[in-house]
Structures are given as structure tokens and as C-alpha cells.
Image 1 (cartoon, rainbow, N blue to C red):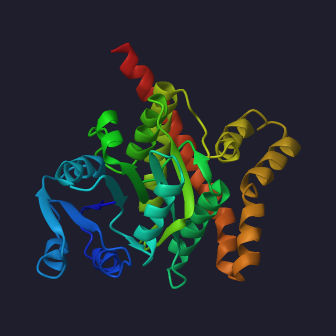
Image 2 (image 1 turned 180 degrees about the horizontal axis):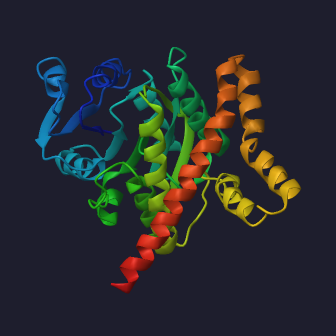
Length: 315
């Protein structure tokens, strides 16, 4: 079984070497690597050229979905494996992927990202939170696939029509693609056997801005695909955001207002405590205030997304 690994890049000089070095160390050898660069302005291309056995396609500045589509058209493998440029696949990753495809009757397979222990504080908190949600999916068929690690049969990919190119940033093109898979009757299987280390480089303001845009898109997604929650985005995550809105109705009732406020800011305490118990790292308790602030950005994004959707409908 030949695999085509496709990595979209844009200003990825910090992580692309880790990503491609990990692919060089794979125990399974029947695969090719295709990198599609979206007009990077840093040294991404220089890092790749002459150092790695990868097909490099220079492309216009575009969203990750469009770059994945370009890579898919170049691919010779029967399976397309999409990786983010900040993901270093474990050495048996491709081998385990082939095993899962041979064992499970699935059209797409999504893997599990892990967080490096030497990550910065924000990266570590966000990464463990991300990892925790993937872990809860278990080893089973799911309704969503994140393209951090995502493989799909090439013939299925083209039957769906590839990723929607209107996404100029990574705010939901994979969720949209997953919904289209389900609508056409194709299946997605999540496995923890295909894994890799996710080298994010988050900063507080850009991270919160990204969460705002994710929430804004999810309103459109809910209207188009009739789906608000999934096996990654649990209902309790959505509820936390709307508790802030609920507080406004009790602003003249201080006891209830304070009670709802405390519930809202402590909403993610069970997850934070569980992660702290597992790792012994007190930094993870910062997930409690981070998730509270993040939920405000989710609420703001959802409100703006809904207003823009109504405005679009009026046009």
C-alpha cells in the first residue's frame, strides 16, 4: 500500500525540519512526501530544498485546504496522509496507519497528537487540553477528523471534491470536510496507534483570536451541516460560553449572578485537576482561567458569526 504524505506550509521554518526528519525515520518505506508551500516569507523553502527527499510545490498564498488539494493532485499513493507542518510523526506512524486501514473498514483515519514535555507553558496547557479531547474519542468510529493527522483513501477524497478553498485560514476546513464525508456515507475512524508530537508555538492574543474565528465559523457550520457539537467539541464546551450570556439576566440578583459567575469560571476545573494528577505539573491548573477567557472569545465569535449570517441572508 503506497502512502502519499502531504504537508501544507506557510512560514513553518521553526517546525518543518522536525516534521520531515520524523518522516525520514519511518519504519514503513513505501511512501512519498509532498510539501506544498503557500509563498512563505521566511526560510521554510530553504530548509526543505536539498536536505529532504520531498516533492516541493511552490504555490500562491492560500489556506491550508487549497494547498492540501494541490498536493492530492500530485499524489501517486492510494492513501493520502495529511500532516500539519508542526507535527512530528512517531517512527511507526505510517506502519500503524497501514495496519489500521487493513484491519478496519474505514474511508478515513484520524490519529492522535501528543504534546512535547518541554513545551512552553501556554503550548503545554493548550496541547494537553487538545490531547485530552482526542483521548476521549477512544479507538472508534467518529464524526469528525482534525487534519493534524488525517489519512483518507484517495478515491474517496476526490469523490468528496477535496477541501473547500474559501477557507483562507485554518478555522474549520477539516470540520467542513468531515461533514461532507458523513453526508456522502463515508466513515472516519479515530485511532491512538497513529500518533505524533505536536510542536505548537502559541501566544495568548493570537491563540484567543484563533478561537474567536473558530467559533465564528461554527455558526455557519451549524446552519449548513445541522451540527453544533461532535465527538471533539462536546456540549459542555458550548454551555460554558453561554453561561456568560445567562449572567446578564441575573445582573440585578447578586446571589444568582455570583453563583453563575463562579460556575462559569470553574467550569473546566475537573479536566484541569485530572490533567494535573496525571502529570504532576501545576501549570495545567492554569487551564481553569484560560478556558474561562477562551469561552468569552467563543461567545463573541458565535454572536458575530450569527449576525454576519443574518446579514448575508438579507443580501
